[in-house]
Amino acid sequence: MNIAEILGIKYPVIQGGMARIARGKLAAAVSNAGGLGLVGTGGFTVDEFKKELEIADQNIEEGKFYGINIVLMEADIEEKIQIAIEKKIKVVTIAAGNPAPFVQRFKDAGVYVICVVGNSKMAQKCETLGADAVVIEGLEAGGHLSKATTMGSLLPVVKSVSIPVISAGGYGHGSQILAAQVMGAAGVQLGSRWLAADETPVPDSFKEAIVNAKEYETDITGEAQGHPLRQVSNHMTKEYLRLTKEGAPHEEIRKVYKGSLEKAVNDGDVDNGSLMAGITIGLVNQRESVAQIMETLIEEYKEAKKELEAQKDFLF
Ligand SMILES: Cc1cc2nc3c(=O)[nH]c(=O)nc-3n(C[C@H](O)[C@H](O)[C@H](O)COP(=O)(O)O)c2cc1C
Image (tube, rainbow, N blue to C red; front, top):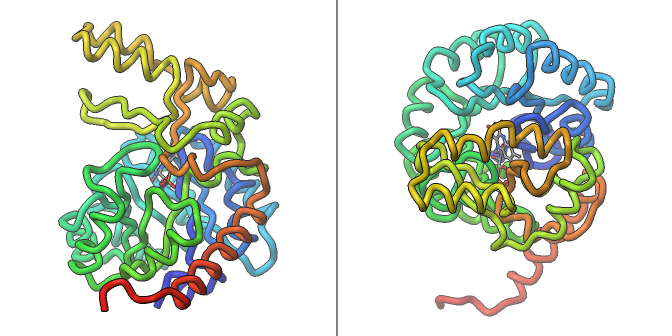
């Protein structure tokens, strides 16, 4: 069964958690369009998180629901988890930390638990912990990175667990979603594809930068610190990479990226801000609504399926 059948939604398309971006209006729009929107804890205070859940409630259509994305490394995560459980959230994705203390707790509260993993070993561990599904995220993704590509890591994970596997990283076109299905995915999770959507809470300059960037215009920073991060290539990333290459002291490098997420998301500073995004930006060529994006993905998927059926087989 795919994740849409399991959750009782229309399409197996999840909007991933996105630090300071996965707010209530975006999550509700994705769920209203037939996918599963997530309100993220990432980068929000407890009060901001609560407010975004309220906004999602106000915007979601009758009979639809959204989920939440928990970023475990946050200091106030315990309080946010409590809020989510009390709100009787139906689905949670757990990322950026050891999910062991949390999986059973969410399950006891009746929540469908999806762990975000970077490889088959982590996927197996999550299955043993009792997770209902996993998201395997490849290095094409925007934000924090795993080591292997989406295509290279999906099959090993599918083969190593018996729970549903959702594929993430680099999906921006319906034909890619068909490919994920062929490789055994039970659904896909998209982040970057939504960044220029009307409902996405980033300044216009951020959206324009996404629309204008090509698939080769991202940089990976943070590798030296053990936290590789993919973002749109700009003055900040180039300075970061230059100083790192020159072996500059960390304090000097820190000055370049300190506060860069806020600069991008709050101030729309596309030169000095961190515009976290994946290589999918090469497929984002216009500003449109979430509903239009979903419609396009479905049309592309149908078209790809038709074309495939009309083609001569490759290997026999
Ligand atoms: C701006 C941005 C912020 C992100 N922040 C988070 C986060 O807070 N929690 C999380 O689990 N994943 C985060 N991700 C990863 C997404 O949830 C998703 O898995 C990823 O974007 C999929 O790859 P794509 O960007 O190629 O679509 C972030 C991605 C982006 C682009």
